[in-house]
Image (cartoon, rainbow, N blue to C red; front, side, top):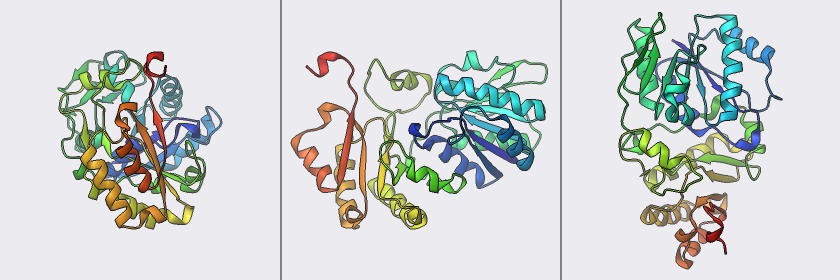
Length: 312
């Protein structure tokens, strides 16, 4: 099957789409894939979309939807694609379809939803479509030809994150992305963990935790993270990578993982080549914790503030 993925954001300040990169990488092992990246387009550019779809002739288009603004833009993209070829299947995945599947599945432009993590689910969906079989796949909701919505049971979250292939960034314009990343140029995205065990009122993580079965907060091994960083530095170093931006919802909650990562980062000499940064909670940062990450060349930590009581 020919699968085109869409990164619908049009603002580089939103950073890399790490989740989409993981799913694309899983699918490319069995199917032809392409990417329509809207990051550096100025708003909605229908001619750009149509040109890309005509070139790639996809059977399935998978669109990553993280925010409400993404969703509005996504529907315009889906409409442009359907006008060109109504037989192309439009599948949405990401945070928004996972949190609001009953609302989004009834949108006429949408053929299916990938709910929860897509590395296994979406591959199985594409396999079923290729074999002309009903996509009776855990984590997939889809419409039959008469509009009937089929809600398959949800797929539990992936338990061992080390089993997931490193994201392949070849489909993105890395020269642009590395220079125009979220907080500082020269950055590449990485994830050391998924989810968060806390219940901050401003965050989607507590709601997401209830939406998908399985253990929510999971970490990769420190060794696996180091291998990915070294792999990416060797592969994309020509674009000027000098910084690793961790996209974790909470970095360093697993203290043992953090300490081992910092030790390996220094042992492998990465602290001489790279800085790194992430997001955490204020109570994570003890003097010992701060010294550990600083010695491994961490240069910035963003801290979520749940209420004014946290800062006075």
